[in-house]
Every structure is written in structure tokens, then in C-alpha cells.
Length: 115
Length: 181
Image (spheres, each protein chain N blue to C red):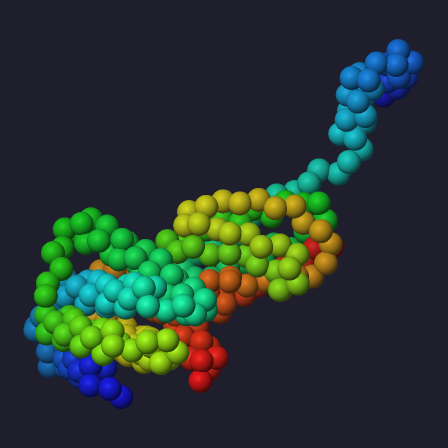
């Protein structure tokens, strides 16, 4: 850690923009919590179980196993993900509780809770 | 209920009665009144009918909501039929024509003719009303006759998913009908 700090300090003193930027990224890597990927599977005209313990910044991976086109459309307009048959689409979450539905099959509904 | 729909209902009703007979204890050694090849044919025919009606709607209707519904019908029913064709190939089953599928086709042809002469709002209303009635009839046949009679597990699963899908379509059509009335 001490060595890394010295390295970052010397790079900063050197004034090079590229090394400074690299150092920033390195520091972020060292401190930022890892973003977890949560998978939600759509199959047989329904959304699978909702993931628990989702935090803002985590990734939701929507996987459409159906032969039909679906969507995950937030009622408050926060997200609108189109899911062609067999598609996998990722989105980054923001905090809040969001009710969503399939805009092609509105009987399909779910609620995503992000802390 | 209009005449073509009545014919479809009667045809599906006959299938339903036959299926009930097949399930009776006395009929243990008898073949099911409706087999998987016939079921596949009925489902394919029913899907094809709705696709044809939707294509007619896309030619005739200028109502954006009706057109969006028709596009959904083409997309979803084509997906079911593609899956049904893959399945019959895999199972090496040849879809068999039968009185129910024949009656469905006959009734649908008459309905298309009737809709063809209508225009504007009158057409939109008649098309959507027919979609409500058609999906109700097909859903009743699926849940009451075709799903219980299906022997192959994959076919049964496809029919069950199809039923959920068509129930969605029925709800969508009912919602649209309320808007148009």
C-alpha cells in the first residue's frame, strides 16, 4: 500500500496526464465496491424470481428464454428494456423501488427493489 | 355470437365432448378422441387464422392502437407456429387435418369476408370485437380440451405457454374494445 502511494505520488509529481488518469482508475478499483450482476430470467410468459439485496450501481441482466418478444418497462419511465426472443440485456440500477411490466403483454408484472 | 364464431365454438365443443369421452374409465383401451397430430394441426390453424386477420387489419386500419395490436398478433402467433413446426418435425409427427381445424378455417374465411367490406371505425370495432370472441373461444378450447388431451410433454408445455399468451391477447383486445366503444 505504501509503495502504491509512493508510486501514485511520484506519477502525480511527474505531471503526465495519462499516468495520473491511470492512477485515479487504480485508486477507484482499490476502493469502489464490486458491482454485482443479478440475473432475471423471463420464461413461459413470466418474470422469474426478483433478486434480493440489489444495490445502486449493480447490474441487472435480463434474460429472455421465451420465443416471444418481451420488455421490462418501468411504470415511472426509469427504464425500458426491449428483449427479443433469446436476448440478454444488461442495465445499471439506481436506488428505489420500481414496478415494471411487459409493454407487449401487460399482464406480466414485477417489482424491483434497489437499495 | 356471429355465425362463423358459432361454427368455431361448435367445432371446438365437439372436440371437447370427444375428449371427455376419451377420458371415461370405460374407454381405457380406446385411442384418444383427439391425438397430438390433430392438436398440432388445430393450434397451427388457429394461429394462422389470427395472423391472416391481423394482416388484413394492417392493410385496412389507420388506428394506431389497432395496428399495434395487429402487429403483436402477427409477431406472437408466428412465434408459436414456428415453435409448433419445430416440435412436429422433432417428434416426427405429421399434422393431421380434422373436422375442428377444417371448421376453424371455414369460419375464419367467412369472418374475413365480412370484415373486408367494413371501413374506418366500423372495421376497427368489428375486428377487435372478433379478436375478443376468437381468443375467448380458443382459450376455452385450449384449457378445456387441447391441453388435457395432449400426450407429448413438449406439446403440452407449448400449449400451456400458448394459453398464457392468448389470455394476454384476450385482455389486450378487451382493453382495446373498451376504448373503441
